Amino acid sequence: MRRRKLRNPLALAVLTTLWQKPMHPYEIAQTLRRQGKDSSTKINYGSLYTVVQNLEKHGFVEVTDVERQGNRPERTVYGITAAGRQETTEWMSDLVAFPVKEYPIFETALSLLGVLHPDEVVPLLKERLDALEVQIASGRGALEKLYETLPRLFLVENEYQLHMVEAEAEWVRGFLDELTKGALPGIEEWKAFHEPGPEREPGPERETGPVQETGPVQETGPVQETEPVREP
Image (cartoon, rainbow, N blue to C red; front, top):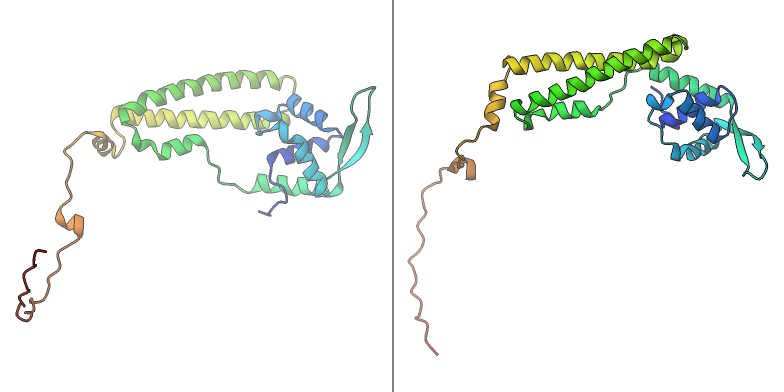
């Protein structure tokens, strides 16, 4: 994967939006909202103007017009350049072709799951599974309606999101089944980790290391007597 000059997903969203036609930043934001791009891309609209300026700095967009309506402030219209089209194509190609390690927060929680007792984990996962099933039901319903008005090409990210939620629900369901049946390998050790027990005092070897043998004690010369300390 090539190293990009800009790696902010919002920059890519702006480039693909300007591919449609030249727009001013406010119109770009409105278009992203209207097309539902904020459901698949984490978009900070407050930084949109900065992103556009960075794209212009790197030659990916350029000013095509300055609009003014009545007493309103001027609006700068930007269009995508030939370099911007090439950057968009290469960036998209990399994202589609090369898997990248992501860090979902649920994966983080699973990696640290041992700090909770198995009996605590079961109701928490049941609560998560209930929420996932609600998402699945609403997602399927929304997709069916969208299929009636939009080509499937514009809904593939929604399909992907739904399949990811379905896959997570299936995994959680299976993991829950193992926990409730006590069939999860290592569950007894997991439970024992949380059981109160007598405190273990470290032995001398753990505290200071093994005692090493020393050679014979060497004799020293005769002890010399010292004068008694005189009181003043």
